[in-house]
Length: 511
Image 1 (cartoon, helix red, strand yellow):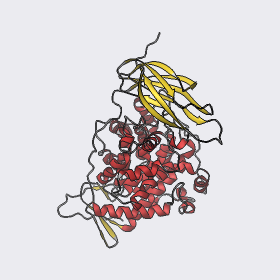
Image 2 (cartoon, one colour):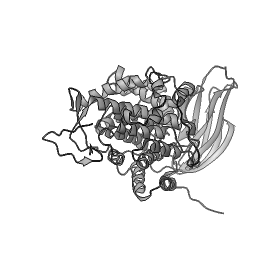
Image 3 (cartoon, one colour):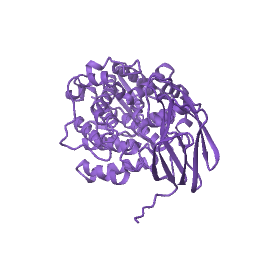
Image 4 (cartoon, one colour):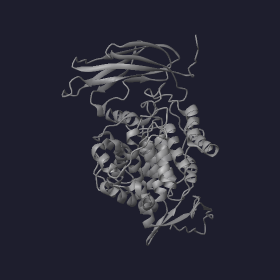
């Protein structure tokens, strides 16, 4: 059992929940055994959650999985998935990339160490991560690699699903986790996208201090600026949870108010939504309506849809930290022992290894933040959550139209639009599977003036996530032209569609 000892100078901690306490600033005494068990529970919970939700990832967009549809789980499922679908675990091996740098280079490693490690890694990436990787490979260093002017995916979910490690190594110290997430999270995200990682890190951190899920969620939200949309969205979930006994009602309220993806061109005007805040809302919905029950939490955060593997991974990771490894129900640990020594793809780190590393890192962060070890216990100087700085990725940017130009030749492509910006989607690829990858050079002209020369690799891992995009143009009519300076008939350079943005919400008129 966790014991709490207050120093004379600290305010009294108020009893909360079942033998737990609120996380006012004070001293938290915890046995090393309990600390290790909670860290193990966090990592195991993540792994269980992403495995469970894997088959449903982005298959239920703008809808939820009906209650009469069974979701798969059986003994051996973990090993089968780890062996046959190793790429499913991107949210974990991205975490491990940062854990590895912390271990090898040190806690004061420069941001470039983290950025270069994931940019040059052998795994595939998408959305904000891929946009940041491209930027870094093209010489745009962090944090500029994640800034909206360079990354159209700045508000996407990416760092939200990769920040688990930060809370697990900062037990009871959410502000310390925020400092780390400021440095690493801005490699690929900004604004609401960054807030997703800050919030998740804080939930993990506070999961060491209370067994009350609602308390952990509410306190973690205090790390987010109140005027941000991320804060407002999660606040709505907390409010609706109190109002509606059934999670489906909260899901519908989220759909009505927060389901529109305003900037990510892949999500504009379609059900798909990779935005951080809506997916974080599904995580919180699972935690609140699950109310500490592992099975219910997993079920709801998966059935909510959209990123239905990462969301249960986050929810069950946070709850696994609250409960501890020993208290995760046996059903969900079926086959876990079989995989705990298996390295995650593209890493040399297994679950058993990261259990040890995170515990080691937690002891160091406790020391650095004024805590100490005392025999078989640690004394943590807990932190009262404070909000990080306010930032907004795309103020005043609203989608106006999405225009299909499927399979259009990219070289010489010209189109007109009326608005303040655009994003062009398409593909740069080799025609023959066994052909050599190449790199093309594309010039972007707007209203007759060249505004950009960009490298366009054919290799999937170094690709540019959007072919071209530009925001912040004067409102009005504009002409776009693309010129490839080194065309080659052995490669496909095609445009598929473009999104038009304006500075006001699109008006709807019926004729």
